[in-house]
Length: 80
Image 1 (cartoon, rainbow, N blue to C red):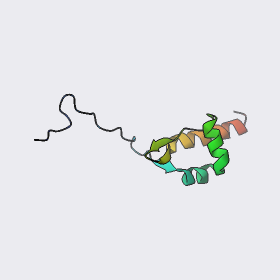
Image 2 (cartoon, rainbow, N blue to C red):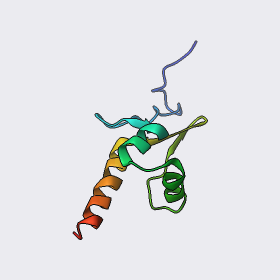
Image 3 (cartoon, rainbow, N blue to C red):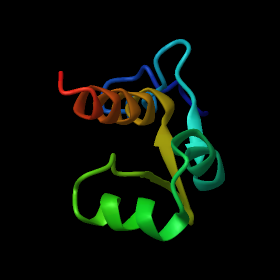
């Protein structure tokens, strides 16, 4: 007989996204940031842009992290 995952020793539930959060694929990230593929991926590799979340073969970014990266670029450009 199969038991529920609430049984002691059973794996915990998979992490979920916070309410309102969404994952973006690379084309959507590039659209939001106005960056080219190579420039964005170079910044990710250098630690200057958010790291992706790997889901199988796909790389996805948290929308809030991309928005935060954009906000930081705005602050830097305005000397704040």
